[in-house]
Length: 330
Image (cartoon, rainbow, N blue to C red; front, side, top):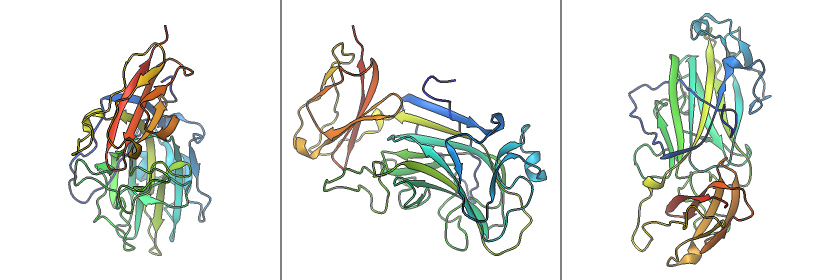
């Protein structure tokens, strides 16, 4: 068990109508990881909440459906009813609270059985406490370019895997799929009051006005089926650092490195850069908690903080530089 939190390991089984190349990129340092294995839980973990929308489809417990019973040695999980087939005209979801962080990877293990085009499993993200939601396979999807800010997916559904309503989703029949998606580079950078508030049109900013959640939504139309629906076995969440993924652009610094590291005083010096007022700095601790969100400064003082690793992001709204600082008290 990690000292940062109760390890969240997400194994997600997902459906794609055509092969999808692995797109998730792992960083050089794992800052935190946590795991929810639903078979090990006697009650629904506190990070998860079942939406109260009607009809009440999602349940937590042991499955009594033959399609899922042979899925794993343990039959407990989160699913669209433990006994009955999914109902018609469903639009029910489960929310997962996630920390405010910049680079994260979610891995899910699941199984599903739906009537293609008529019922499917949708994964979404919100940065404003649920006022608006974005499909992971949407305008922020970045699989086509290794440098685009947005979501990356691995073994996920594609943009052509849609319901009759046009929503991308998992549909059909799949067991024990492991799939991942990743917010890469922050989707996009949101700096309140700055000219480049959104780096990618149509995307919801990571640094927004509310809390951050994932939503696993099951949707069906009026077609009557006797199929099992969706079952989630485990969820894993990982925060990463990506210093090697930064690109340098003309008239922008090739790197932004804080020195000294380690620092015994807790004071770190950042380089002087051209057009400094156009840059912004976010600093977070090893648990992913934001401890500073401020205009770029030459000096950052952490002497009142605890010893340990701290991580920073410097951005001008177009490009991003990341790094880490080690505060080691004498």
